[in-house]
Amino acid sequence: MGNHTRVNEDHWDDSTPLWRYMDVYGFLSLITGEKLKFTSLSEFEDGFEGRMPLQNEVTLSLDFTDMSQSFARPVSEIDDLRNRLEAVRKNTWVTSWQQLDSECSLMWRVYGSRQNGVAIKTTAGNLLGALDSDYNYIAGPVQYINYAKEKVPDETDVSFSFHKQHGYFAEQEFRVAVTDTEQSSVDKPKLIGLDLSKALERVVISPWAGEWQLEALKRVVESLGIEPRLVRHSSIMKVGEK
Image (cartoon, helix red, strand yellow):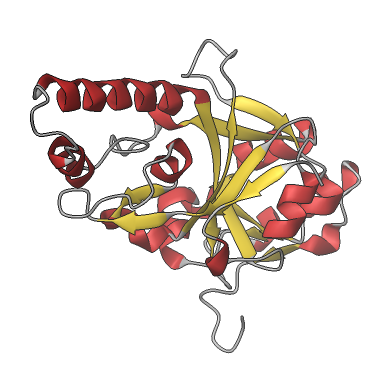
């Protein structure tokens, strides 16, 4: 297992189940290239990703140790922190998973591309053990807060990168992050090697997919040396199954 730092450790361990939803093309790209896509935080849909909540700015503005100091000092400190966090956002690359025991209907609808969707199930320990060991990773579940009313308690780059607006709470995101200051283009994903034999516990095809799609996917994975028995149809809409 490569080097990694764990955050929010009270909420997970190596046995924690993780899911990643994608369309079939993303899945085929993963299993043929054996590389996992990491996206820059600056490219995430949520514009608050990695940024400082309002209450953190308010706290910094009021944090005077010497009231005779000019008000320009705290303003400058806030600007410096903003600029640093903006650089961190661009240089932090993340792969997002859902931390949940079973399949999620919402995730199938949002990320599963209807009948062309595929979900991968693994555990946190297996995922970290399968990633290219040349990198230093930061891993853990995201904490959700109200960015207008709450603050990030620990004002570190890592802490800001592992908080998200409460409106995304249903995603129950677990992320693995890596820092790379050398990749110049943030609009292109960073691809990191993944040992599929360690990472893949189960491959689940969309609940809207037909039986022929399931069989076709089994043939494809078998041709790539992956056990076809790992591939199964979603049971989320089947009564009495898990």
